[in-house]
Image 1 (cartoon, each protein chain N blue to C red):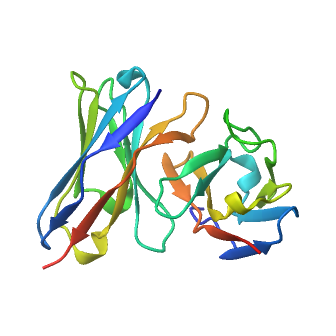
Image 2 (image 1 turned 120 degrees about the vertical axis):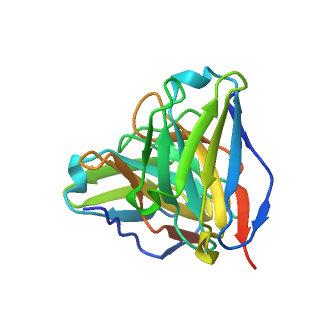
Length: 119
Length: 108
């Protein structure tokens, strides 16, 4: 079955960077785009960007341009999202999600990674 | 437009229908997806392409989309349906994805 398993919780100081991993299994990694979405406590999800694992092409939300980098390692079917210059309002649960083959929906999600930014 | 508007909360008695709306400029021209998120869990896709259900989602869940409003309908609400529900669209003009603010469904 399709699975997306994310790395564990992180605590970072303001100004630092965080890199979250998303290890996939149960499907051909390079055939489906991967998205990253974050959700602050009590808030709706916020889309951050997408990556095509086949060629590495990316597209980022304007809000995160210059601070976000999405990469992948196709040999281990894993996607990564790195966010730099962290601020306290970056504290949130970060999810990776697979783009559906049928439409622009996200059909499978990782379990989420809590990133806390605190001095 | 990148704004999707949902009511913060909807309450319904068990066995009754629940309707959750998602408002956006000309949303009827876009493909709307709906997600269910239970407390402490990742979102789950329940409706895609306005009206389609992924495998494993009960027939009680249905969707519609026209004009400036998309609607998720749960025909006979059960206690296990209590969750937050989010709508989502892809904005072709900017190649961005947008989520609504979410609606908390409470089963009375």
